[in-house]
Amino acid sequence: MSYIERIVGATADRPIPIYLYHFPAQSGLPWHVELIRQLLDRFRSRMAGLKDSSGDMTYAHAAAAIDRAFDVFPSTEATLMEARAGKFAGCISATANLNADLCATAWKSGDATALTAAVNIRKLFDGKPLVPGVKAALAHIHKDAHWARVQPPLVAYAETARKEIAKAYDDIRSRAASSPRAA
Image (tube, rainbow, N blue to C red; front, side, top):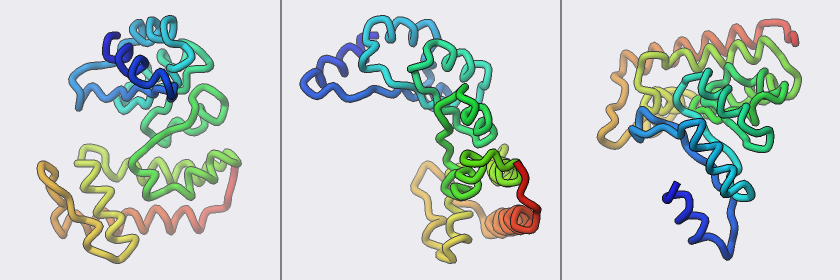
């Protein structure tokens, strides 16, 4: 609570909206739902929302249910239809760097083919390091190996893994392009 109180105080002359970042696997500390309620009670005009990178959809739903004015953004494209229906404010996903067009199509029209392709692109990285994987895919898309570089402590994908990701990505894109569009 005191952390947010200090931010609110330090920005009182320019009251920017505050978004919480829920990523307990990296921070070691979750934004508990009850704490979010308390923050909203105390700083309602400043608490705008939460980016949830926990992957815990039960948590994301609980956070979104606190208050309709509190925007929750899960980290997976799989939630786009729920967001479109108003349960979430949207999604913020690292893999949207690879499938933004598909996400936009699914968001605008409810296109199930586009959504499935976007989710399948995300699934390419299940159980694998996400950032190096996204960078490897971007290197393939842009035909520029520099995109695959990472800084420690991250480790770049080996050439074999980069080729596998590239082939799988191209296969998903090809299937999506040849499928009839359906909502």
